[in-house]
Amino acid sequence: MSITIASWNINSVRFRIDIVERFLAETGVDILCLQETKVMDDAFPHAAFEAMGYRHRLLHGQRMHHGVAILSRIPLAEARRNDWQDNGEARHIGARLPNGLLIENVYVPAGGDIPDRLLNPKFGQKLDFLGRMTDWSAALREPTLIVGDFNIAPLECDVWSHKALLDVVSHTPLEVETLERFQASHGWVDLGRRFIAPPERLYTWWSYRAADWKASDRGRRLDHIWASPDLAPAAKAFLVLEDARNWGKPSDHIPQIVTLDL
DNA sequence: ATGTCCTAACCCTTAGGA
Image 1: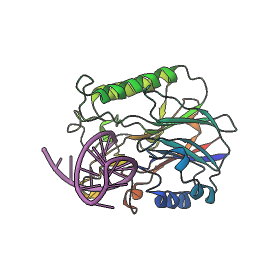
Image 2: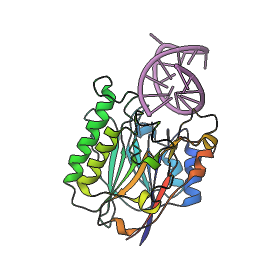
Image 3: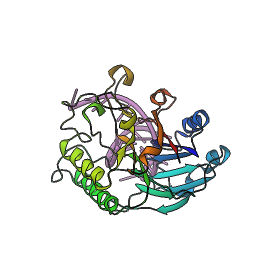
């Protein structure tokens, strides 16, 4: 059985429901994991997904900020929702497929502007979130796919300028080390980089603030799809939809899709 | 230092977060 799973930071699912529908119509993915849905569960736009055949929906939303959701054509059960920041924010939801596969959808905190936990509590919260995620991951025994907006671009070729971003939250050495500890705690395989190997450029986010995002191309790879070591060989294809950054009323992130043969 | 976008509210302009 072949299944396709996508991850996309949508920056408001209600405001961007048109491009979500376009994405589902064009790709027909089996499962879509969204981050930054920015909607409470009782106001989620269920009808649009129902009409397109995504009858199975797991929501973990809140008012105004954050929020994650898993929309699926395949039946799935909610496995867990973790609060790795220990402050009640809606940043994770996990699902279990009928075949037992676990899918974890996560929105790691952005971490504010100053890369110092003493001057900027948000930066400390980001590191602590990753620390709790690492403890969870070290105890994990089942084949798992973890997807989402990690808000860290770990490799030099994950950013437009390694040198210019060394002090910029998302690419600081401390964040990269913290993410590497998470990766090592379970032997996570970075599927994006298994298919698009360094030093090739690979970005999933471009700021809204650039006059012409494509011309300046100051991108970062903030979004990831990682697999347990025993699941990774099942990944047969991986792609990012860079074109979606140009769609009407775009998100600043683009979707990525993995194909698993199970 | 700046740029833009989305949400909600002391609601048509501003603040906070990203």
